[in-house]
Amino acid sequence: MNTEKIDIISGDRQIGINKAADILKHGGIVAVPTETVYGLAASAFDDEAIKKVFIAKGRPQNNPLIVHIDDMKMLDAVAYDIPDTAKALAKRFWPGPLTMVLKKRDNIAKSVSAGLDTVAVRMPSSKDARDIISASGLPLAAPSANISGSPSPTTAKHVISDLDGRVDAIVLGDDCTVGVESTVVALFCTPPRLLRPGAVTAEQLRETLPDLVIDKAVLNEPKKGEAVASPGMLYKHYAPKTETFLVEGESDKFINLVSSKENAAAICFDEEFDKIPGKKIKYGKSTDKKALAKNLFSVLREVDTLKVNGVYIHAPEKSGMGLAVYNRLIRAAGFKVIKL
View 1: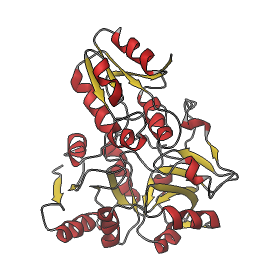
View 2: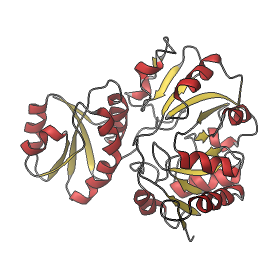
View 3: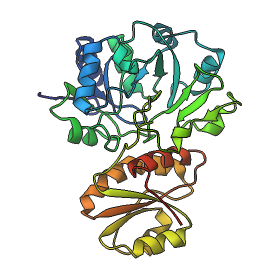
View 4: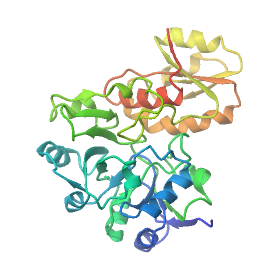
């Protein structure tokens, strides 16, 4: 497949937006920038187009997709029986990196929701993404635009590396500003459940949803074959090819551990970088969880260039956006955690 590159930065932006929308309207699949990560988009109404997304990514069919919309009218077209809590969350956090799982209308392609009777929906804050949705007139189902299981793409370069020749077009937009996928909250159940943490934190959600519970799969290994209600809940995900370990513990203990390992590398906090010998990558200050999230996937992609036998990653605190970073890292490590 010859993948078209649609440049909306240095080229004519509106022509690029319209070109991407036209491909989507005719059953094609297009990699689109959002504020979280790049998404691989297709019409949420077109089952054949959705199947192309799964094939291009090598994505398991039991892993549901998120539907992206550009206004509240489109929400009514994809979901029904929308609770007041969803409207309150939308008023506060949309457009933005929050996905709500709601009851699904029958016009949504079955493959979008992996056979479930629910649909995950969000309104991205990225103007590029919303303009493409608007120009197409379609809600767009879009998982991350990468090979399934590998670190998610936060730049157009990442997308080209993974999907060139596999998709109809790649929109060349700005780098993603958030860097991890959206928060996912289930609102079809009582009490509501946090299925995947993200930039909208559990602490923020509880201001509207005081009875919110955090799903056990956020921090714990899921049972094999268990049905998942949200993207990002599968066993191993976001992973480099290099064997990866997540390390919990004080800085001095982490430095001592990685310093004792042969042919290994560290992903560390900025303040630890100069204290660690050998190969290492810093991903932000331990106190700057937004930076850790923004840099995370680029750092995980860099790991395999180091040519080491293993990489040890210092885990952040599991509060605020740190929970989102930890959630991605524990999956990148295949739930191999060292507690010091």
